[in-house]
Each structure stands twice: as C-alpha cells, then as structure tokens.
Length: 109
Image (cartoon, rainbow, N blue to C red; front, side, top):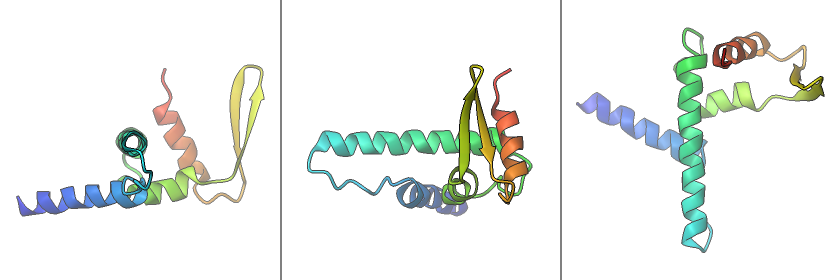
C-alpha cells in the first residue's frame, strides 16, 4: 500500500511540474479551471503515448517531462504534400528512430 501511495504522489508531482497543473495564476476561476482541464488532457495523452507507443522502449517508464523533452520538443519541418502531412526531423536527432517507432505504433489502421 505504501509503494502505491508513493507512486500516486509521483504522478501528481509529474502532472504539477511537467504538465503545468500547478500554474493557476489567472484571476478568473474559469481560466484556472480551463488550464487544469488542459493539463489533465495532456496527462491522458501522455499516458496513451507511454502505454501504446513506448512499450518495450527505453522511454517506457519515463516521466512526462522526459518524454516531452526527448520526443515532442524536437525541431522538425512539417510539409503538406498531396494531402499528407510529412514531418522531417533533423538527421542528427538522437531519438529519430524511436520517434518513427512511436508514430507507427500510434497510427490508426
């Protein structure tokens, strides 16, 4: 039971620090509520990426901030060619192959 409590505290800390749930600096309640909704949605999306796209990889148990830094905050050129979106990552991107794996796993058939 104690380990589960510690894990839950880590998930709360992850959402607060990595996904900006602690940032409720607006004067209006509705604005802060919307920020918390966005943070909650970001957490759900991050869990889906972790569960579906990162299973069996070295980032499978990574925290949201690490996933965000290594997979989502990368320089890319997005092209719209023939009705398709193409993301071109830099050839020096260290997680380029992992990015491709995750994208293939998340693709809807």
